[in-house]
Image (cartoon, rainbow, N blue to C red; front, side, top):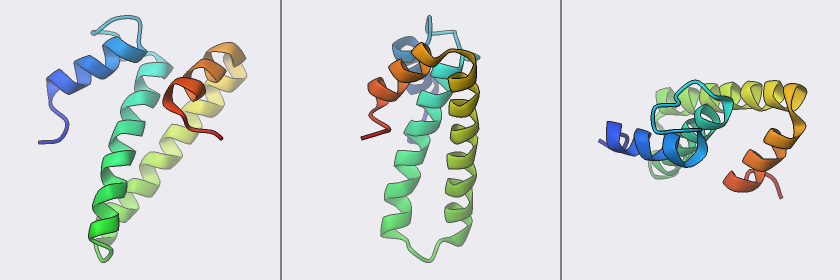
Amino acid sequence: MYLDSAKKAEIFAQYGASATDTGSCESQIALLTYRIQHLTEHVKANHKDHATNRSLVKLVGQRRRFLAYLKKKDINRYRAIIKALGLRK
């Protein structure tokens, strides 16, 4: 499986406050970004997989809502996570 508990803990440790910090916006945005990247590669190889494409669109929308919330609450944390994940140009 592409996303096991060890990989999740690694993502949470890198972008959250600790390895068990699963609720912060930064850690959730990082996890969604990892999943989006994986599904993007899958959709490129399997262009007729419409269910996965729909899931990808839903994940992108969910990440966008997290980013909008974080931007409204704390612009410095928003800028830091955008820079760390390389989401904007």
